[in-house]
Image 1 (cartoon, rainbow, N blue to C red):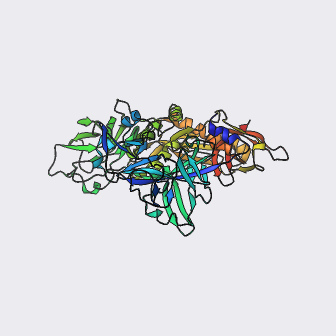
Image 2: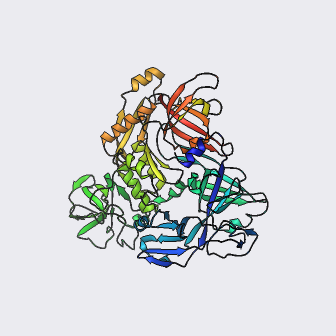
Image 3: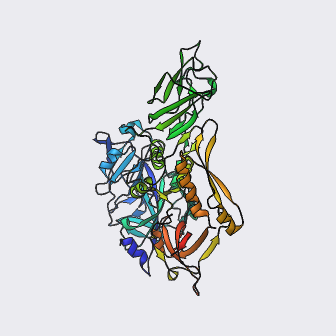
Length: 595
């Protein structure tokens, strides 16, 4: 067992909640470490040095050390650097120089030497980028404490309440309830704090005890500062979920008449599509339709190839009739039609396979598509520092291939949710900020049992009577031009479910699946969890539940204090609510079966 697990298993605990903000400190001077890697050494704070408010006992480094009321006495303060930003982008924190070299837009902080190493975008030198900021961690606590020689002042007015949940019946993006954290400001400590660079900066909540090392504290939430305000008594910070940063709209490139001088004016300003997997009957744009005179041929572009070539061009259609292109080029996703096959104004569409991975294979596995989107458009490189690679790989082996054609603007997070719905899984951010993906698996073993004597009060039960289904229709293999789908209806359980509830309830699911076999598996999985009225159990338990994650299977004892009720029930965890003031955790579980 870990030190943290030992701590939360104790009957009597002395808990501490930490709240940390990374304050951006501008740093323009860098030293070349090796080809493509740059470094800067941050100077430790030593005893007997006083600081003004801005640096205080929290903001460290060789940045304007000015006199002031705070004195660290005999403690040497070891700086904590948890983030780095350049040109408005947060870089990925990695755990070694080896990972730094292979991870674009990343940094590695060596606390032992207080050196930060940075792999700037595309190995460019630092002077290419504006606003280079080292995120030096400022920490506050529910009680004053030194952790690894860093002082956390008692400023938390109350510990935050943090909630996570997912749709108990179906799948998608984990929901996070945005929270406001109040810090004490009666002495004016935070009066000028809002002038510092904190908007959009990383923030985190940690939980532990005075007996733990800093490294053994458990991170309960990782996010970023979205809003803040100050008054005479408090400094309030609103922290948003990291997935909110995935709000960037795709596609990001547009047709223009500089690159494509002979493009039809009505196409200028429209997005250039993106594509992964097998795509059916996608509309394309003629890039020389307005060329003067009558050209010998017409060129067409299928999608944006800034980051990848496409894998294959299968079939080209003019007004719905198959034609053979004069030439095709996968690197630019283009093809040429002769004038015998095309007249300006004809409707041209194409069946094709989207981006390939550089090794000759299409990017079509649902989780490979998510990784590629995050890498190319959100600056998130797939590594053990950014993903739970074990869970991710396990889910990757189970999910289906998808066909994702993005021709109209849609946020990254909504595109990921479309994929989640299509493969019966949930895209999650763990408490430590790592991304993971979980497939609903009612057969998976329970990772924890919570008996009635570990609960506060009686459980509650919610019967979701409006969420059972008698049948499911899966819409797949979309015709991109006509915006129509092929359909796979699963009515195999309709009569049994109707006999039980005397109601018909059918639901259609739009997906990015491409085969009927995958649609059949999805329909069956949906009915597995919805052919009965879903039952949600809710219990309140001890802080040992802080080791659990959404979609874990657990066993809950659903009995009253005074008598038996449902007994032990195996459940999928669909809701977690940390009440850090009461030091309790509320869990919501979707019933799977009696345990």
